[in-house]
Image (cartoon, rainbow, N blue to C red; front, side, top):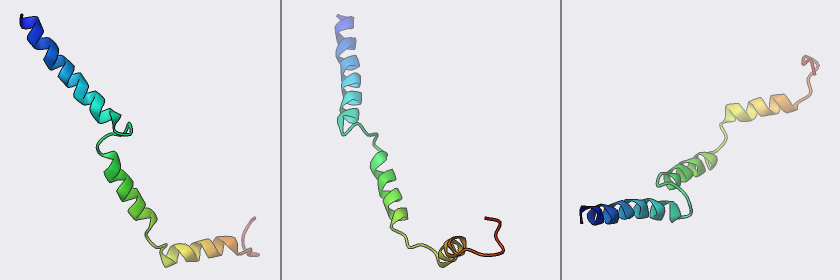
Length: 65
């Protein structure tokens, strides 16, 4: 009879794990990470970085390429 009491508890633990993985197969923290990533992607490009990209795109006689 003690074995009967352990089985349901064990099944419940496995079931709860399967349920959390069943939600689009993503861990709980994935939605927060996605929101953080999206907020960083939406940030404007700093002027200093734009200037650097412009200098890299501009063919210059001083460059070795």
